[in-house]
Image (cartoon, rainbow, N blue to C red; front, side, top):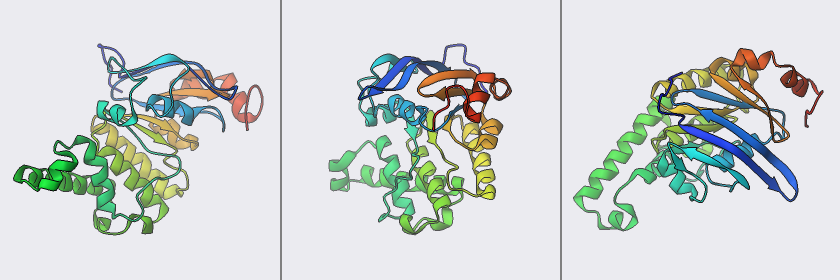
Length: 262
């Protein structure tokens, strides 16, 4: 973990969110420092994905604030939040299945292009150079996640585990400072999960801060610097993996006692 004397990269401040009278999040507050891996755990229905949606601008918070590098996130559109340096993957893989593996990553790079749609139509030399840069960067990212030999394969034909790697490569294409990963190990076998853990460490080594929602506790405890525990939209605990594992309220939630949800 890299300490930041200038303050957190992300500050979640007293965030609450409800849907039709159901309180999905209630007064959630924590900081994410640059260079750390922050794990976000809790039983099903705890509010983890909802929190991701609020941080990325997909849902507006009812109350509270989200501050990223000193900039308020609420009120910004999703692509604007991506432009600030926040990217994410999804619990259910969301790829353009009719496009190639390489094309999917190039789409993720679009947020960092200068020419835009009309520039691409002109085919000017500067635009062609930019297209080559996008292609080269996308190929580099495919190599980074181990999919360099699949670049021209249709993404929908990839095995499920590889689709998850492709989604991570596409998210990295936007040059995020903060990457939110929503259950990246779901559906992976033990070998693939181990490889994912190694990939997360390499992403962190690039200088990317990570937030991780994951039900695989072994993976979460291994890669996380700090962990926030949610249950029914409320914070049960936060601290190091060791502190969280010894917290009685957390144990009760996971063992079916206390405030555990299904």
